[in-house]
Image (cartoon, rainbow, N blue to C red):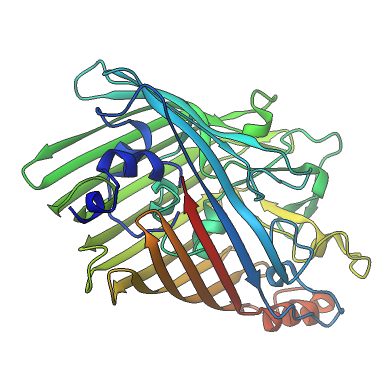
Length: 447
């Protein structure tokens, strides 16, 4: 096996990839994320670090301010920025053959560790898996909710430096104070949320309990993953008003060969999430569903290739981030500088992405992806459509280390420009015209 010749075993790769993003693969991530290999030691320590540089042109709108879309997160203070996006330290292993554990701390600077209230390292994963019962493995603690492919993958398996817009906006959930001292202000069918009401993101994770397992029959493999958890930010577990979340994913794979994170296979999957978050002292409904397909064959070989396509939709609570940073003195309108949340059951959003890649040499990979996100088509004044074409190059220094360079061509459409109030139309049109393309370079180093 080529990887073994480079000093990596399948067990080592699986251990590191659990918490890491970069190499395209079609693995069974339910298996790799939650259960240590049988050959794993009682304690195994690993990790990775991701320095990243991102830049846009920093185009301003007619009010002289640069919109957040043209600034680099998580600080949103500059149109060009160098950052340690992720720095993860992980420990995992077996207590016995039926009892597995996994813990991971995040030390990078991102929306999870720096939600707007200041940077602080945080525990991002922390769970145990019990495999005593045939046909079901039970995982409890801080776990990933079954959902879209990017949410299931280990970070080292990401094909690009950024999520598709539909995942970043629809699935990378932002949490808000459920019971503010003063009620949120109603606006355009939704509510305005000031910076003090934003509680950050969970990076697809929730506290809860999951039942999961996989079954092999020749080249076929069926996998199920279900979870019941608490819909609340990991930074405020147990706060009044936490609602439940139920999530499930089913997938069927045809395995061409290999195993672990680099196996060659064709996989189809469906998933759904349902939650009842509390917002402004009331409980609302939130639902998300999706389906997709992944294909990967002959990775790290000339001619190796991959393909992924996924469609997803949401109903109920849909949110939008502020158009501009509240720190800009030139912007005084709360509708432009505060997040907006649309909690009613009639709200909708949907989107998809299609992408693929090819190894032109065993180390050099070329990738291309198109993603589409239609936000709030039911609310003409707030309807926005995001289009992104991303071209990427990956140079694999080693199976778990690489350099990634992406160029994203981005555009924002306003389908109903006359639906906004007359006074707002010029700035809405200006924001749409101002959206910059973005270039990103990232280094992934593991240990």
